[in-house]
Length: 214
Image 1 (cartoon, one colour):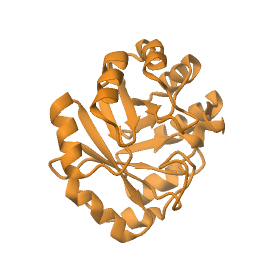
Image 2 (tube, helix red, strand yellow):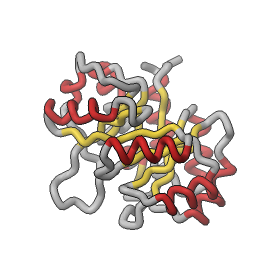
Image 3 (cartoon, helix red, strand yellow):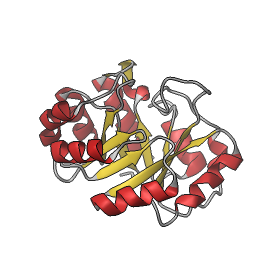
Image 4 (cartoon, one colour):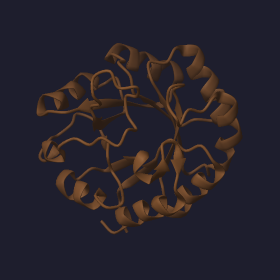
């Protein structure tokens, strides 16, 4: 059995949560970002969150959030993790982590080897780094667009924090990505969808099965 943690992100329906649980996901991600097709308001999160068993981490994915929306989502979803996917500086990440007491992740957009070094500044501020593909300048979303970066950049890289891999993963390539990077956690969103924001239960199952074989 694989020891790789699996995060199914951008979940919006009970069926998708159930499929993630059947597949053995360790984390379920809920996106709060109005421009995203996966956006959930606090009220919708409150309806879905109780379906996630307590042993599975509920992750809120946020982009440059203010304290009010963070508090609203925590109250609605009984969250375990905050994933920050915007331009949050280390001081802001540290402040959110200290104020909420929740495990806090920082997404690091990657296109070149130089981008990996940006994660070093978050040592002591975040609990985990999430290396994701850098989206094109002016893109509508900071992630969840199916882009991937050159995973060989992570070969031999030693981040200062626990970390995970995101960006362009799917059932067909996740084993290859794990062989190249040794990632302890993989995060998938568009790679288990039939259309933007529409999770496919068979693709969730296939992704989790592919990871379990590694």
